[in-house]
Image (cartoon, rainbow, N blue to C red):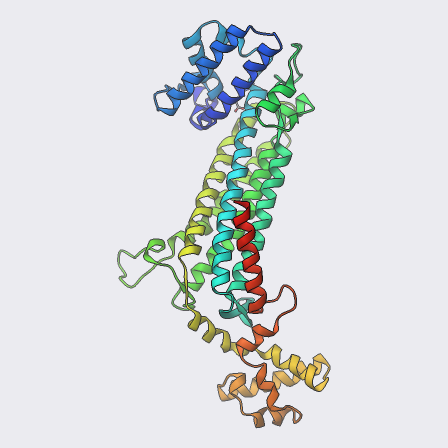
Length: 445
Ligand code: ARG
């Protein structure tokens, strides 16, 4: 029974929140004259000492005492005697744990948001440095059109900024206090729930006692935000794995963020990127785990709810590590501008620019321009030449009205520079957007 029932090995992490909740509750009980001032003072002093003991690693956690709430209460009893027994007036472990866990998840939201902003700042700084560095843009992982790597980095800044917004939204919704809901039905004692809510930084008390003790959608929202963030991280991690491979050769990580092989001396493995990619599995798994714990659970409290913490702690820890590692890698990564540019020019990446020129200069319908361009690409392929290396006569053999002016759009630099419409990859746009992000993120600090 003890083995399946005890949660102390996991929920001891809630000790700070548990003590904060008890302090607020004791102060409120005294204010409402439910316990005496003397008892409240003794309780607070005892809790202070317990906090110190835990901080110093001297506290004896006991599995026989089941969970963090009973462990702290038992120690309080040993320290201050009878007054300790009055702390649990108008309270149950059900509203207590719900309060502790909300406090913990609220801080997790704040920390994830801060870590995301640090990552965004690293990406925006890289984007500004490489606002004009051309790389192949891909669709289907096939060379599509040239883009700049600054634009590519800023795509992730947009994603991570929405992720930060999701943590902020989740935080705002979870910021209601369950304390005082007691076991499930509320309490006959004349408690002041607004007082405890305010003392703990909540916006207001939860309005329904049954909901207060039995809901965990606040943790589900945290895990959803974590999962979406992890998915975004995994895409960037995967790209770092690809870019740093000798086959791509677009970028390199220093020794600080890569590892050697124990057998192959030439290897520089992007282990951190691979682990960030893999953490996604554990984070998404945690969301799935808690969704299934909650499914079909009748109101109000059931011990199933104790299984909410392991999954949440694991996901939040994994996300924090993944965000820190990714921030480090983004700062560390060295971009090989020449190799990227060379790759960008391969694969007839400016074929669309040629078709667009035919539309603009010759007033050709786009479908016809597409067809003419296809024939020119076939010739280039045959001659093993890039589009901008073909002689004008070769182009004119397909479409006699083509003039020398066409070469002004066929280079990769011209291609990216032309994409000036809002949201496009033109270096001027990228520089402006990168600067906007750099200064916005510095302001929010
Ligand atoms: N350790 C429990 C949990 O995490 C605390 C609440 C226990 N409540 C109860 N009625 N047994 O859910």
